[in-house]
Image 1 (spheres, one colour):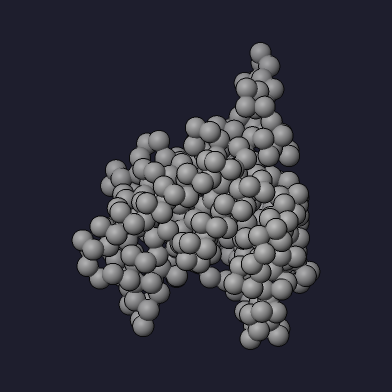
Image 2 (cartoon, helix red, strand yellow):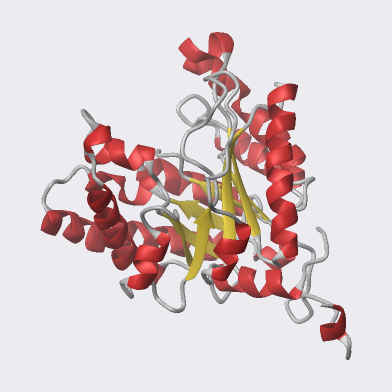
Length: 331
């Protein structure tokens, strides 16, 4: 683990709970959220509807999470301006445009226009997040994605703010029409991706579970794959939910945290069932009961098994950085 600076340390503390575990809720969905609201005509979902859902998610769940992940278009500023983001909850803001360019076999991430690390820092956020579709076996695609990640990482170093990277694998070639074939590649893809991405100056890896549990069910094999993921990641890592159902995500979090993960950053597995409900009262009731209970259950299992982020970083919680008498002169 690279030496952490004071700014990054302080902000990592802000997105973790008092035990230095990440129990974080993702709410930065854009295109996928439109589809949940109106599956037949997602393009007809208005700005106001999107903001309403973000406000509902944040007001219902943010008080239980160590941090929330919000997008800059519909969520981050709106939740702050409406006073519903708790002062004790960390704020992570995404930096990428929704979707990708380059076609389905070479998915390339683009940064959101007129947005960047400096603005995320200025608005008072605790961390920056980027999603990159990634295939370590497609060298040209991987090199372009790594260049994008590295350019953002350099800006995060400049503005002394933590950087979370979410690499997501996807099927190519014959895998597109053969889910079992893609599932067979998943572990190797996720583990090698972790090795390549965390070689860059990032701070937290938001990792996929390194297996498709629909095809791999042996507990010891799943644990071994997560241990390999832990060994491959040079930085603290958390598990993402990738839209799976809650029971499956709960099992993934439990296994991953036993193998070295420092928590989770889950979204749809916690709250997606509410988004198709047309009635506002029904949605809010669901979020404040079922979704909150899910989040609490994840926090409980994570607190039991997860590795504090500073331990994965090879640090002592009582001395996270060397601070000399004149540190401020050099900062």
